Length: 395
Image (tube, rainbow, N blue to C red; front, side, top):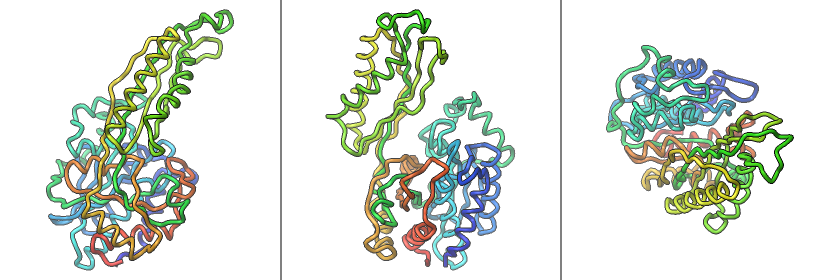
């Protein structure tokens, strides 16, 4: 039987690695991240699982094949919450442990590396799934100029060979919702129907750096003013293309030379958009590019458009989803729903290899990727119990 107290104790123990106030700072390949993975490896071994680190530092606790794979990730945002990813890993560990003790179904566990994007986003599962060649991933650098190859070297002799995905019959990921839907509705469980697709590119506007006191407004080629105009105009131009579920974000901005008495000569920024419809993602992309080029032309700015990163929308496996829904109806009657995931997850990449499904529990106030991230412990345990029942382990 699953042990809710042991599950919560392990979840709080994982929280201690990189703890900062109520949050956690445990980016991929950092000292707290590697220490956390060593601790997880020990807990997996105690549970009777065969421990294996692959070349990316993805950590597997393997049951005899064939087995069902459960898990998520244990790295965090630079200033992250304590449940994002960690919940799915510890729930998987508890269910695997309980199933083995009871002679139940074979359950393997995974903690994927760099889901949070120090080197791009869902990097560990992208490499494992074959979506991203390791040679391409290795040259990517983080914001401090450290390459993935350099970061991976910190794993030392922990690294082993590849883990064959054919030994797994499917993958289920328990996660916090990271949005307000369940919490606002007073519901405990969300069974995911699909994970939205996403597109992202880096854009650069270049004007003319000049003196802020002597350059007349009418003669300026201000790159930051170009970004400001683009941002405001884009909302209007997308209005007839998007739905209420579509989102777009300019989240990272670098202004050069970033001095108070200089008209900005260049601005480099990220442009990201998400939607559950692949065709709509393409239409949004066309509007974004056309709007940027029009603004640049009007303001005398040069445009540079970087490569587009993309993941298509991913539907969940009908059979695994039905098992989650049946368990939710038993354990959270009238307090569960079907819902899409607006956030990206490792399950998107794993779906290239096997059937996948996802399960959500509420995020208090809809807050995630922040120190304030939290979920009521009763809801955490319900999520654990629904997942356990769905995979055939006694709650």
